[in-house]
Length: 120
Image 1 (spheres, rainbow, N blue to C red):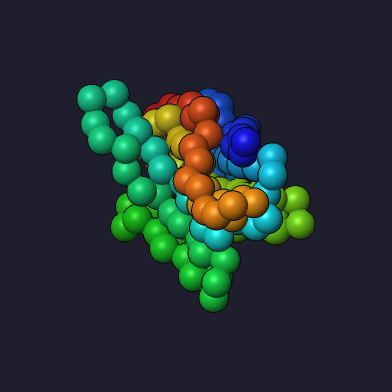
Image 2 (cartoon, rainbow, N blue to C red):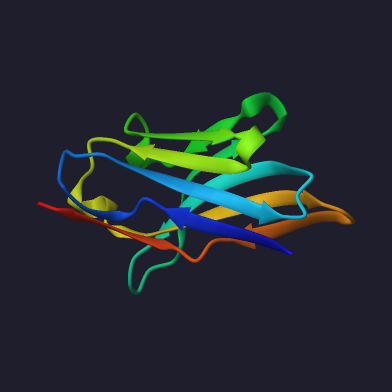
């Protein structure tokens, strides 16, 4: 069983910064892809950023490019999302996603979500 635990959310003023962490635990052989998504009430969950282990390819949603940085520490099975120059429209519940190599194959896992609130 694999678990993802997010941390680092909270309340910050516009223009400020936050760093989210996503720690994976369990029978993990490696994290193939890690990503961050966000969701606001009444809206679909949307992609924020992803990072693939092969080639280190990263992708960012347009609204966060240049402000957010996704990274990972493979030794710790942990992913991060550094969020700078935060705006009120970044307010959402942020979810960590990981595609993980486990003993018998590959599985997709989600964290429980962490609230990020930006005050204007």
